[in-house]
Image 1 (cartoon, one colour):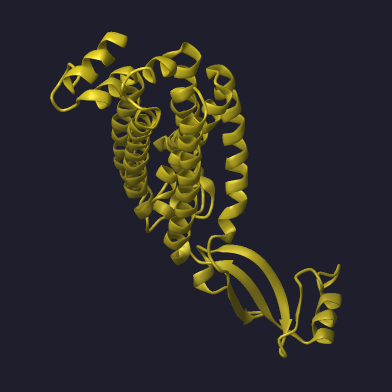
Image 2 (cartoon, helix red, strand yellow):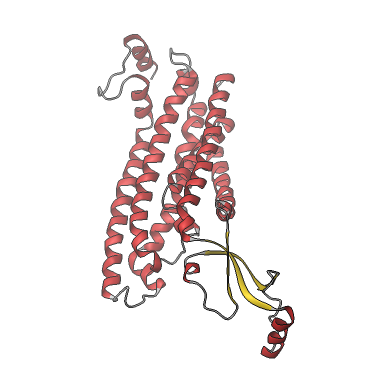
Length: 325
């Protein structure tokens, strides 16, 4: 590799295809196995989702859907839905552990980083090139797979086993999947830079990613302002709540005073009626997030993740430029 770097600095280009020269060629060659693996996963995953999309359509058509309701477990078991959702949900963690964590830690552990910095290439330029290629692979993979899964989910969302507000759908459609992949990969790179050992970096990155998944699950409900809906106590639930995420529920009096849902949940119907009459309760009041808020919530969440990625990237570049590798 030393001879290659010397030749690059002398001639201004590295051997290889004209499409890639200099440091780009070296980075791609060094990480070609990982990049080809990501490419293969993206292509094969897209083909698999397209196949399952067609298979689900055939299953639903044979069952008479949408005129005839089809049980969600039957759909999941006959279309490989559970396997697909599990694989997509694991993608950000896998990329972080196997691509992000070893990216710099591997070079530090094997001495490649020190060798690179003895050449004419600056540490910042070397790291920037590695980050750009890594981020590009991660974003392309996440975007393509998310686009295919969104295409599968949207027309059949009523028969999916998970609602739009839960991780299997929310995190794997729209911009959230590539943003999660990008953030966790950046976190893995930063952890690897600090720990300087591949195995330790992979282990810590896995634990960190698991914690992020839990925290992210709690954050979803706060990505958009909630709405309030009031309807008669004995009335039918409005259709707009069918695909909503219910955050809280109360019962209310005519003057707008709210009581906890269980206030009049008495042991007998007569006792419940007496409680309702005593407090003048006439309405159900629901706090919820609507399905139409999903795109805004996803873009808000993706923006937060991209901003966090930028912070980690700036820190990584600063650390490399200030501290010896």
